[in-house]
Length: 178
Image (tube, rainbow, N blue to C red):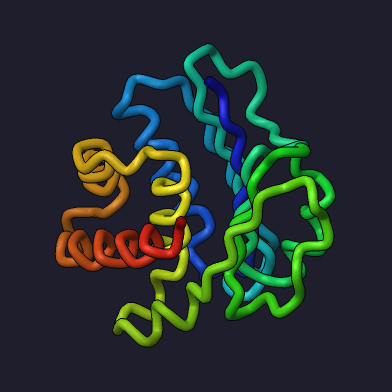
């Protein structure tokens, strides 16, 4: 099994954090992984993206040109990458910030108002983790042990108080997947 992810949005939306979480989750499950961040010079407010590959076999290249999974957290990201998703792939999008529908009919679409949900629930910076929760639920990869280990890797000891809040955000996202 190999799954290629492309996360994209504005800097400051937690794009790199979300990708790093998935990469660490793969590592804790003894998978082969690749995590390749990319961001514009503006950082916050500029474009940010990251490619993640999780595989049972060695990863030959960290470049994801045609993702199985696109996570678009803003309209420019959907506009730019929608056409690159493989037929039969999945697009997860933040419908708070993306008002248009996906134009393709050969991909699965999971639209979640992640930014609004995050704000309404008191964790306005965790729209990214709401989408991660949806991804894990969609692909049946939300085992508590792997999630706990991965969160332990990406959340520093200084921010240990954010562990439960991140889990709550992920549970919210999981609830949106049928």
